[in-house]
Image 1 (cartoon, helix red, strand yellow):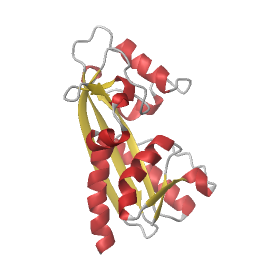
Image 2 (tube, helix red, strand yellow; image 1 turned 60 degrees about the vertical axis):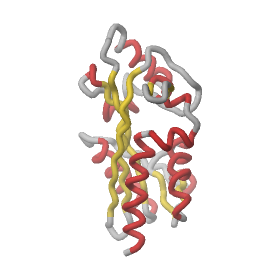
Image 3 (tube, rainbow, N blue to C red; image 1 turned 180 degrees about the vertical axis):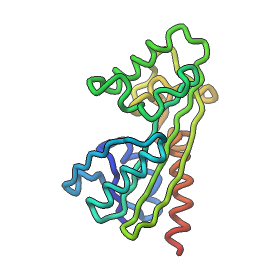
Length: 196
């Protein structure tokens, strides 16, 4: 079965294929189908934004579409950047600029607690949907560490592993990450759906 990922993010594609390929699911980027669907993320939650993206790409492709909306929520910032994680600081910032901005905003903060949240939505051409969420608690590091991953990975620290997301192998990250947890729930719900 082929799913279209409602994203241009190669890293998300790799994480999803790592987990879903075991179930005969191949996930492809929309660009591989000649599509470039930009969806305005107007939802107030990660789940709402994921569903908006999945519906739009399913409508454009005619294939089952899967979308992920995720971000880092920092306790000391009342949950910010949250659903604005990918747009934090404005469109001129890249991943490094965004996490540097976060580190600057967090200067002097003793409460570094944070969590990553991932919401996954899948929409089928017949209108059926599957949704799943996952969360990973951690903290904001005082400086970036590691060169793996993407986004806020170099500054998202896991106290129990004494590493940031960016210091984990893809397999280690999939086992503990918000997206890994959301995909595990999604995987179970997809298996149930495919058995019907």
